[in-house]
Length: 332
Ligand SMILES: Nc1ncnc2c1ncn2[C@@H]1O[C@H](COP(=O)(O)OP(=O)(O)OP(=O)(O)O)[C@@H](O)[C@H]1O
Ligand SMILES: [Mg+2]
Image (cartoon, rainbow, N blue to C red; front, side, top):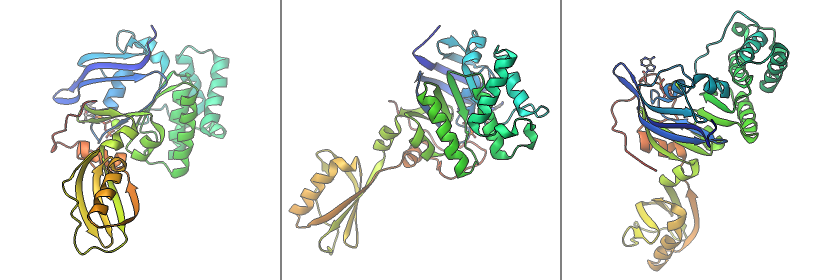
């Protein structure tokens, strides 16, 4: 059965004996999308992926991949999905090319084609010269490359990458970005989890933010940053003695959250700063202050993320999920 959605889940629940890892999760990811899943440690990202690929049994709700139920039509799902997991789970006793051939074989590919696909996947990720090496003897970055090759060898329609760039150097990150962008351009749906907001902004056409098992927002990175608070810096011709009085903080196209004076600059925080800027300048003008330049620093996805989850995703935090915040319910 085909479906316009690569992934479609409704009211998905996963309860690990007391720990609710997924709660009422509903999400649709269109075929061909490059979709990002963001959230602090313990948000449920890996659990969600594991439910999709049959490694974890859901405790409630519905989960489909290209229209097929992830449990009842497990084989069909498995045939269409390639996963590069967060934790390495690789056979360490065989040369990596053999591991790939075995993987392709598992997907019903004959030996000759499996060999060709293995070579191709190793070339794609740039470790072809290591084909006769065992996984254990690869460097950390090569291991990351290898798990991507393993996800690719079945030529999946849906590629799932669980923190593919965690702890890799800048060069490898750029390399992985290029490889997966090309695959997406060729039609492969990509689901990526990441703690790097920059990565989500660069790559994803839509992102979901999760927190403690719940989906708290779904939007394009650009839409999400629009919800954040921008900073406007207005430089004045003359240095005012006090904070200019511009009247009330409600403007035609939005409201001002704060207005301060820093030397000759007025620093204003507002949502959708570019929409309020013209009226702000007019009001300043009326009050006798002439603006000479305006600089707008848009909110970053990272700031929005922090607002929504109460977590600083930029800092690489460790282990435990946060329990101290009530997550805001943002629906889109
Ligand atoms: N096998 C398991 N048994 C019990 N609890 C589990 C198991 N796997 C995950 N959990 C719990 O489920 C919650 C979600 O974990 P999960 O690994 O899905 O989070 P994550 O979003 O992938 O986090 P990270 O960013 O750290 O990878 C956590 O509270 C975790 O402790
Ligand atoms: Mg995880």
